[in-house]
Length: 427
Ligand SMILES: Nc1nc2c(ncn2[C@@H]2O[C@H](COP(=O)(O)OP(=O)(O)O)[C@@H](O)[C@H]2O)c(=O)[nH]1
Ligand SMILES: [Mg+2]
Image (tube, rainbow, N blue to C red; front, side, top):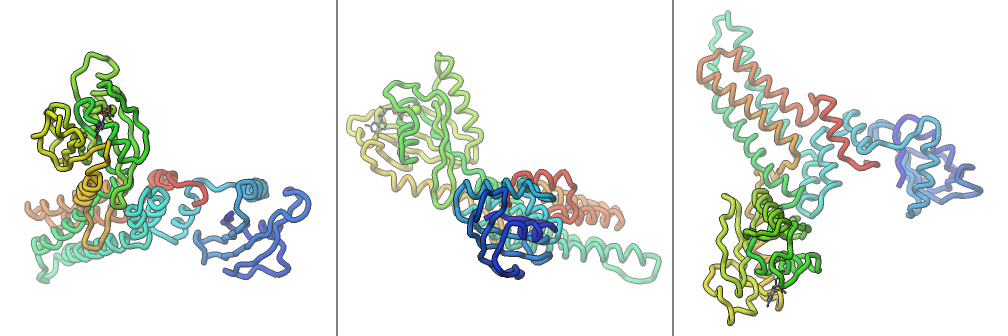
């Protein structure tokens, strides 16, 4: 589909389209595209739908041309259309930007469009749909409304402070402000999981040379990607590949292992392994039945799955006693179902949502929420130190402005540029 948006959309398409009847708002009309620049005779038969402003996706006049599939038809039409007066190709994200500027969607929904475009798997996609349908906006709107109520009370006290009226002291707003902080924090807590929904969970394979890390990497991925040999130290660089587990994307990282080595390239590989360990979300600690176990300290707070490989060799093994969560063999395929199950448990164990099912995935939203919580915390300490209602009110006002940035009521232009720049053309 080729889409035109803006005030010259209708007159432009009328130069190309003949149907024997007028286009009717929001009705699909079958007809023919023809134009001298597209060669002699009919170019394609198409269906054109006209959405007059403001009842369209962008809030402007929109014309959608559904043509036959195929790169040539699409490219030729785009090229000729974009050479017309008052017509040019859209920038990435421009349709969504216009929709936002015309009040058709708030900023968190616009970001959800970006999330939907970038979603790599089922769970991330479902989350983008929850955001797109405004649930995040509603959550923030509720926070704003409750905060506004508190601010109004405190400011009313300021306005009438010279009169003999009894007002509640700012202390009595403490519990409400603290509950706002708790609600914002529970949303912020979902960011750790939310970011990984979008980027994938990093899962390095760590272990002594020849334990079968590269072999496991290949089996989990379903095809041979990493080089497997009997020579210890074959894997020098890290290689990564996405796999799907329980609807989540995991980025498997095959590493060089962590042994001390004299080979310079291998040493660099071992350094990389250490860096991977620092970024890890789940660590696969690999041992094998034929190789003595090597001690390694996993990073704190990161789930580790202890894998004992080469179960087919257990009888001749030297490593029968090492404790493992799963016992597998790349040779026979034994244990891989249980291994998948363990991986699924590990990612699902990291899932965080608010009670409304919300998860934030954007760094901008997380950063803004953090600033909001900070300004509420400043208000709380102002109350504790009897700083005076004018200070409390001003900190809370600040919080209101910050919340407005999440939905886009008060977002500076440079931030808008950054958000919409991450879209693809035609969205
Ligand atoms: N018998 C047996 N050999 C395996 C198994 N997995 C890997 N190997 C062999 O172990 C050697 C080292 O494997 P590789 O994946 O390169 O180990 P890495 O150094 O940890 O990456 C290769 O010869 C593999 O064929 C297994 O489950 N059983
Ligand atoms: Mg290897």
